Image 1 (cartoon, one colour):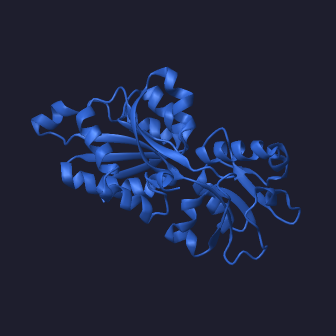
Image 2 (image 1 turned 45 degrees about the horizontal axis):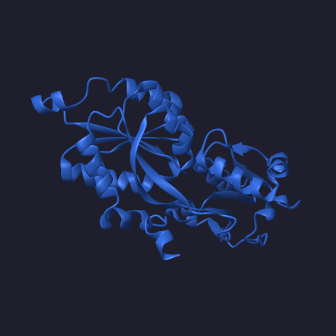
Image 3 (image 1 turned 60 degrees about the horizontal axis):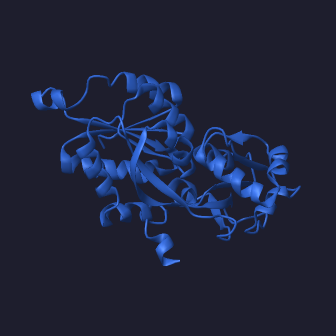
Length: 268
């Protein structure tokens, strides 16, 4: 796979600054192919990397995927003013940052949904209820609302029940993103986490973790909005990528990795 993936705020920033000067002129002169930079939340990196890989072959371009927490990614894009697309883990990031003028048109590429994740076989008999996080016999880890979409979505869901502060005080620690949450579970640091449902179906997680679904009222599906960055210098190409991500082929890839596709709510 030629698509490149990077993680971490400092790495992302260094990568982006190193891309200065790439673009249509060099591509036209035959020096380097056109490059696209996509800021992608960690949870969606697998379907997006496969889509990027296929799109590279269709368009003969090079795509870099910068992965990390949704807020960290936005701040990297804002600081560098370089890049083409931004895919956070929930729509609140678009709402939060729209007034800054960096997020342009968007398409919905699928839906995230909260779930409880437990060790394989659910040995602690955890039920599909967020109040299980308050059980005294369970070690609990949740996401940090300041760094990633999973933490922000978890906070909203727990605040709705009026138990966020209680869970916060009970948690072993706060994880920065969805990957860190699953890693903590696999290392035996927790009995229960709240994470994006799709991550429980990834091949390296499904062998050791089980998904305990939550009712839709407690875990509202969150739209995955692929945003065109207004400072992109490759807008026609970027729009073709957006169209491909929402095509039947692109949507099949999202379903393959455990996400609801972009028609999910229409079928409810």
